[in-house]
Structures are given as C-alpha cells and as structure tokens.
Image 1 (cartoon, rainbow, N blue to C red):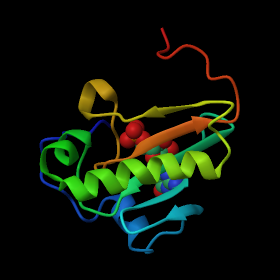
Image 2: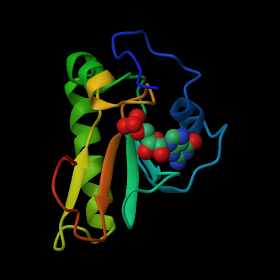
Image 3: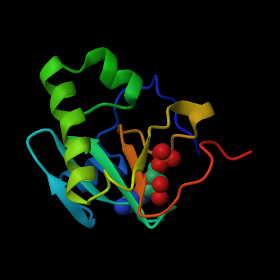
Length: 125
Ligand code: 5GP
C-alpha cells in the first residue's frame, strides 16, 4: 500500500532494517552516504535500489532537509553504482516514487536504477 510521505520517519521500515544489516540483501555498493542492493522483485534485467544512509522518508523529505554534503554524496553514489555496472554506454533509467500518486511503498528514500535491457516507454499506459 502506498505510504504517506508526510509522516515522520519510521526506523522499523524494511530499508532501515536492511541498512542496519538486520535483514539480508544482495548489497552491491556502499560508501559513506549510500548503500545499494538488488530489488527483491526485479522489474528489469538490472534493478538496483540506492538508498541514503540518512533517515529520509522520500525524495521530498531528502531534498528539503538533507545537508548539501548528504545530497551531493548520495547523487554521486547513484552515478557510481551505474558506472560500476557498466550502464553508462548502453544507458539506464532512474526513478523515485513519492507518495500515493507515485506508488511509493517503502518509507525510506530509494532510487530505482533499471538497466541491462531496452526499457521501453517511460510511463506505462
Ligand atoms: P517503491 O514502490 O516504494 O518505489 O519500491 C519499493 C521496492 O522495494 C519494490 O520494487 C520492492 O520490490 C522492493 N522491496 C520491498 N521489500 C524488499 C526487501 O525486503 N528487499 C529488497 N531487496 N527489496 C524490497
């Protein structure tokens, strides 16, 4: 069920548990600012989730409250993950769902990184 992105951060959400190592994940990247792991239900050949280490509910929360350092570090981490998976030349897609219209289900900011195949139209009709 889509989450309400205006609610306070819930440190029991599934990605908070993955971040703390309480729940297993197929981690493919980590640095000071972010971790990345494979989506449990991939929607493309490559479907990786990149999340900030900080406690932010959504892109809205992050872009409003994170420090410039956190934002810079996170954006760089997303680029690093794509480069490390050789996705630049073939191309890839980034997506962040926010709230009900976006269909966001996990209340910790995550960027979906899709690649490894032609991804088709941007939004399904
Ligand atoms: P959202 O709809 O919030 O943008 O995307 C949430 C994503 O998290 C979905 O693509 C879903 O498959 C993925 N997901 C949900 N639970 C888990 C989990 O426990 N582990 C991993 N690796 N991915 C998860």
